[in-house]
Image 1 (cartoon, rainbow, N blue to C red):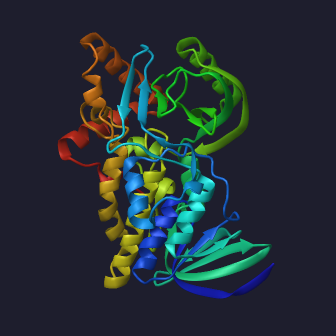
Image 2 (image 1 turned 90 degrees about the vertical axis):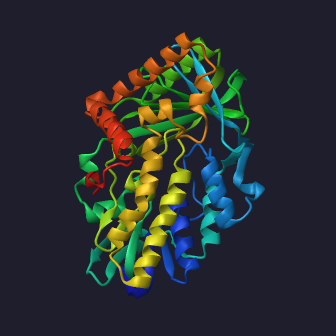
Image 3 (image 1 turned 90 degrees about the horizontal axis):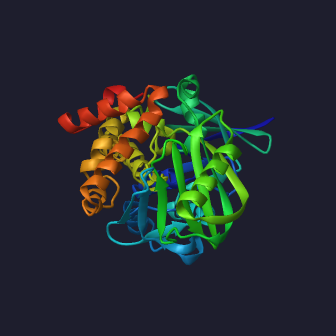
Length: 407
């Protein structure tokens, strides 16, 4: 392999999704040079529901400008989320502030990255780093050539790929449970589910993560479960349930999309934020919202990573201390979405679950509450059940999630 000369820059960002774009925007706006390494050619396909939260919508408009029509699916907007329960009760919640965009991730990610102002090296795969304290030496590969970079800080923002995480914590991927998250697209024969809403099932017999929504004239049906199980069998079980319980009649599944996901850290407050001059953000760090929406938390955590780097540049501070202090607010927002006490008695989802729950009869409310706690028991084999409830209790009494659990 041929080696190029070392390219020096202020910051290297690995990945080109929402977290990377937000981080790059903060750095370039402050006058620092950021180089983004993306292993695929942009624009690149990204399996994703595409449903953006109100908070993420506001962030995009405030930081990147009005959203062009070309980056939206049809329906172009989502009015809210509907929670479905085994007791056959449903809670329909409109998003705070009204409908939010249904993003087409392939053009949307490329659009945000272009508007970030960063220099993008796509088709370039990060392969390793050495943190020397004052500088970080980064290696990458492009077209069978080795590229070398030198930066003050490196930000890992490539989602569940975890290449930067593995460079800092080599054994980390083997120490966490991995989930398979997959979806298929179906022609619609009859679907009583409201097209204007994202639908999520709190049903332990269906999977750890089960959802459906309309997109471009078809219906997405998705399911998430621990790696090692069979996706087609799991997906078929969900289809049977939707037909029997919700009268949903769909054609055969097409265009299957399957990815691995590490959404466990957000449930049990076990985020990984890096060490030395390397920080981790977005889904790489463990951020993942409950309703299959990781974009808003990626945008905000990525922006915080960029702000931490800017502050460290300006005041020659310890980026780890700065970042961990700043990111604690995003930890609260994200983990609150999985917190059963917050779900039942707060408003963690930018939709009024508690208010809508009160509209149900007392017996129905009790059935829904039982269903929520029954669903949480699905995580007991991972020894997460007690951790989830303990973290929920600590959050209630201390007002935050303990940073002592973070890497």
